[in-house]
Structures are given as structure tokens and as C-alpha cells.
Amino acid sequence: MHLKSLTLKGFKSFASATTLRFEPGITCVVGPNGSGKSNVVDAIAWVLGEQGAKALRGGKMEDVIFAGTTGRAPLGRAEVTLTIDNADGALPIDYSEVSITRRMFRSGEGEYEINGDRCRLLDVQELLSDSGIGREMHVLVGQGKLDSYLHARPEDRRAFIEEAAGVLKHRKRKEKALRK
Ligand code: ATP
Ligand code: MG
Image: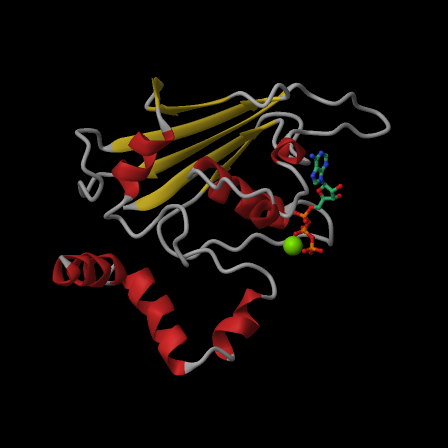
């Protein structure tokens, strides 16, 4: 499984539809300060269901919608589609390619799609829950976050690693079962 492409439309500084294609392996995004590199990472977190405006470096969720520039009017909605190569069947869905779309309007209304079919956020979360990607996973390490990982207490650092490796949910399930 790997990320195949990301399309941004009206998301933050990406007013016009922009598609980034990724190959298997490491992808580097380079560019001057303020050119939108972190916005690309925000788009990945957002399409996977991020609900916190702060985690997306904004004050309110609406801040993900293109706010306009001197030469260009603001837009009414943001839309991001992430396409994942699922040739190895890592995601529990019968498609070799899976596209997740999230759309949000200025009214605050939002919607999700899996391969073009409307769905709930819960469906997106369930689809990704065993894959090691998704909301509240420490697979996205933000600018400045690295320090906090490096300076964490050993037991906290272990929790990060367990979460990234997908062990944490089993530990939580076990703890819950033992409490019953
Ligand atoms: P650095 O190298 O400093 O980390 P960067 O390439 O990561 O820079 P970003 O933080 O991704 O840059 O982009 C910041 C730019 O995105 C700013 O110019 C900001 O005005 C613009 N931006 C953020 N949100 C919006 C929005 N809703 N509408 C229009 N532009 C936006
Ligand atoms: Mg940045």
C-alpha cells in the first residue's frame, strides 16, 4: 500500500485544482518559505478526518478554505482527494485503488466519499483503522513535533512507537477486556 496521488481544490493556498503524484518510496516536497509545503501535509491529515482546526494550523475549520488573495476571490469550498494504491489488499475493500474525498463548504457542512460514493467519517476511519494511517495516528510528525518526541520520557516514546506500529490498539483492547 502506498499513497498514489493527492488532489487539492480550494484547500488553503491551493485555489486551482492541483494534483501531486507519489511513487513508492520516499517523496520530498521542496520549495521556498510559505509556498505551501506544510499545507500539503495538512491536506493529508484533513482528508483522513482531522477534526481539530489547531492541528491544521488554523483558528477555525473554515480556515482550510481558500481565503483569497489580492488577485483572486475567496472560494466557497475546499476539496481534497487522496488516492491510495491498494494492490496488496492492505485496506479491507475490494478495489486495487481507493480514493478518499473530503469536501467542506463555508456553511460548515462537509462530506466524505470513498471511491466516489458518499459515506460517513466513521466509514473512512474504519477503512483505515488497521492500516496504520488515519486520525490521531502519530504517522504525521509536524514541524516542531520532532523535539517533543526526542525529549519524551521513555514510556511516552514507547507509546508513540506502539501506536505507529499498530500495537497500541491491541494493548488498549486488552486493558479494557481485563477491566471487565
Ligand atoms: P515553510 O517553509 O515556512 O514551512 P511552507 O511551504 O510549509 O513554508 P505553508 O505553511 O504550507 O508554507 O503555506 C503558508 C501559506 O499558505 C501562507 O502564504 C498562507 O497565507 C497560505 N494559506 C494558508 N491558509 C490559506 C487559505 N485558507 N487561503 C489562502 N492562503 C492560505
Ligand atoms: Mg512548513
